Amino acid sequence: GGARPVAGEAVLAIVGGDVHVGNGVVHRRGTVLCRDGRIAEVGAGVEVPEGARVIDATGRRVLPGFVAPEGANFGILRGRPRPGEKFGDCLDPESLYTELALSVGITSYFASGRGRGIANDANAVIKPANGAPELMILREPAALEVAWTRASVTDRGSFRTQLTNARSWIAGGRKGRPPAPSGVIAALDREIPVRMSAQTRADVLDALEFAKEFDVKLVIEDAHEAWTVASEIGGRGAIPIVEPRTRRMPDLAAEDRSGSTIESAAILEKAGVPFCLLPPGGFGGGGTGISLGGVTGRDLLTYPLEGAFAIRGGASPDAALRAITLTAAEALGVEKRIGSLERGKDADIVIYQGDPFDYRLMAEVTIVNGRVLYERSKSTLFGHLPPR
Image 1 (cartoon, rainbow, N blue to C red):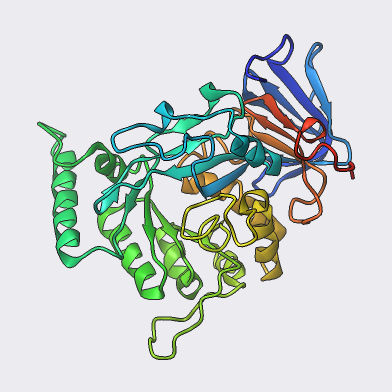
Image 2 (image 1 turned 120 degrees about the vertical axis):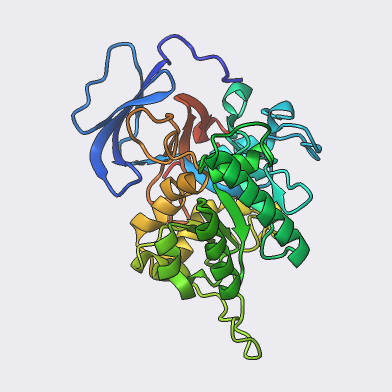
């Protein structure tokens, strides 16, 4: 359902709401005009062409669709992709998970089909476009995941050799067969980011050293102690993914275990470092990304709450909104397509009842590529709830 746009739906106008662009700019009672799946115009004085489908968002907030830096393959067939298989080959666009994701305003997420070995590019940025499979794959592969901090000395050594050879091959005009897989080449070309888990301060510094040596874009996963080296992270332009609710105690016997803090995001913001947010242990524990298996069994439905915890720890609402929209898009390397309501970007939009960081409020309408794919009033799951 909902896959075919009806006449007039190629042009969609959202009028009357407070439009939060995602980069700090707000248009009070603004208009977002979408044409052919892209954002055509945003602002207070935008004219709505005749025949456009109009959604009245008066009294609501109009926000960029939320982008999750990690998710547990919702909208993908269970147990897939298998080794050697692409995410595009195993979509499940009618899955209830896709409706749940849209119901909270999530319009894109990073899915990892974690491979074996030290480096893996079996991953994708996916849109949970309920009923619209042609919209679901935004980018594949989307990152080079490197198990650097957990790798043996031998594995590190051989991977470093591969990277060094690949760099020489690039510098020498790319003659002959590439000495490394395409994902490694794409990371060295800075086309896709490198993602590394780095839980301790020492691991974070190690990851930053790697990024400096090979000049790659770095995203730091599980960055519990990133707040202790905020200026170093800023200096490398790396993006940490922090979990405001994670409780990691300092270890008095280990000097490099300073522990986590709810003030993590605020400290990073003060140092000018953009950050992303996740619930404890990825979404759903064990680093699996967004799922229904979380701390309260419903992390999939509470993504914006992580922003509320970041704010509780002293971060600004602007930085928290950026964390779940534009910064997350930057971490996924797709900020030219999604993450903010700017002209030319994909029309991925969520109309929220009010402040997205108020746990009592919900998404009213979620739009992917200019198509209305979720309306709370018509939802089988949430349609019974009274409008606010």
